Image 1 (cartoon, one colour):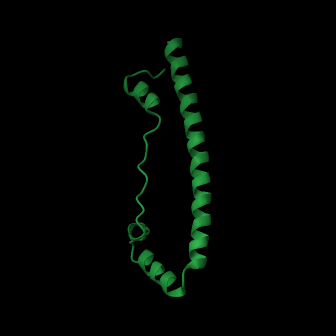
Image 2 (image 1 turned 180 degrees about the horizontal axis):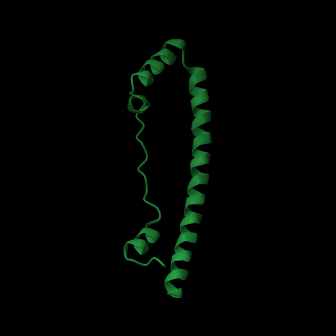
Image 3 (image 1 turned 90 degrees about the vertical axis):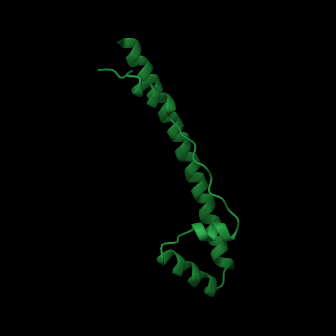
Length: 94
């Protein structure tokens, strides 16, 4: 039982490190996007800004804007599979 517990603790620590790194990357990406957004807003005229406001109020959000400029959303990558596999196989400690 101690072996299972130590393996589970190792998997949890590993997952925490992965999540911390992912949070850091997302924070950095958010900062870049906020700067890009500020630049784009400064370059847009009032008609374009009002059109964007209308689109977001209608619930279409950023997806049509991404399609207009040819951006594709980044695929999400599953993380933490080691921990999920361990728990799914009944490797939890009691």
